[in-house]
Image (cartoon, rainbow, N blue to C red):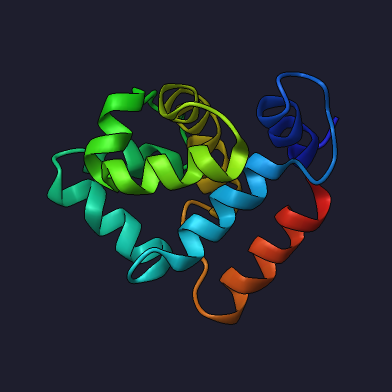
Length: 131
């Protein structure tokens, strides 16, 4: 099973479904975050969670994050918007996001570095098209 299959399985609750709406929404959220993925990293650092997101970018083990920690970084409105788009409660969205965001960031940074510019767009497009 490939890396993209792993993300699809995690996002789909082990069902391996392609074009998972959660993955698409997470990629859109990253893309539309002020500053993109770099801005997201900065948001984590500003909220005292830089070590967690750095573990997702690095080549080692991904540190876990709670839904409440994610909500502190992203804000309640972004979590509520994601929940509404996916037809789930904000608590369900936080839980799902805490599982999939680390994997998406990890897959977007396979060599332990964030892709820049066109490389980021290409990586996001590949993930979105494969999941």
